[in-house]
Image (tube, rainbow, N blue to C red):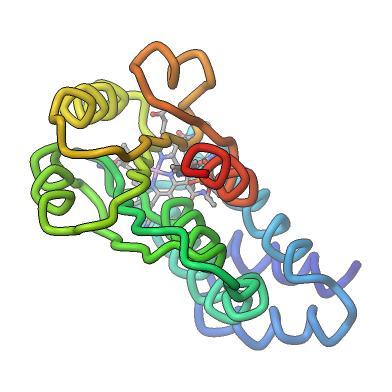
Length: 209
Ligand code: B12
């Protein structure tokens, strides 16, 4: 679909000011919010591949990320389904040393729309910050950890270990991010894993039911 290709092209070239109108055009043209989201995620994958091949550098990745964020802002009200029940509190963050937040934000958005009160601690979150926040909240059911770098997988492991040894209450820990596998998740002692934001909701509900 031509409009979807335009969305991909703008994300790829980092045209952050033009993306909102183009996403709207794609919607008007009949693309679904999920199709547009998938197209943008695919494009970020391609951006990453070009970075790996030294064809582009960090600034280009950054403006593509900004463009995707602006596009997501248009989709957000359409993707969020509107919760019917309160499922408790979810604390989410990207682990220490890691600044990637687009995937984490998407997961936060979907989990929120499923009915959790979401507290987003942002990026580069230390294990101790998760612990401090859990202590402040009365009804934590879920802690969600995101990590996009192989170099920050040890921080994810450390955070899960800290949370599991903390004796802070009856919450589950779910992990995700491109380098995270189901095997790694169970090896580090996480209760759950999901490969994307949609399945994160299903997994979260199963874990906290
Ligand atoms: C955008 C981007 C950046 C931006 C981030 C901006 C931002 N605000 O997020 C900037 C420019 C800052 C950046 C910096 C770096 N980056 Co970068 N980046 C990317 C890129 C191109 C896209 C990531 C993205 O947003 N994808 C789209 C989202 C929607 O997908 P996602 O994050 O995977 O999330 C989905 C799932 O993983 C899952 N998920 C995510 N979190 C969670 C959490 C839970 C609980 C669950 C259940 C699921 C889940 O659901 C999400 C939605 O479906 C990737 C390439 C790639 N293929 O991922 C490289 C990539 C991740 N970056 C990489 C690198 C190397 C770096 C740098 C080290 C580069 C450098 N030399 O400085 C720095 C590190 C900075 C730091 N300390 O974090 C490498 C990592 C390689 C590796 N194996 O470790 C990648 C893979 C690029 C590559 N191919 O080399 N990056």
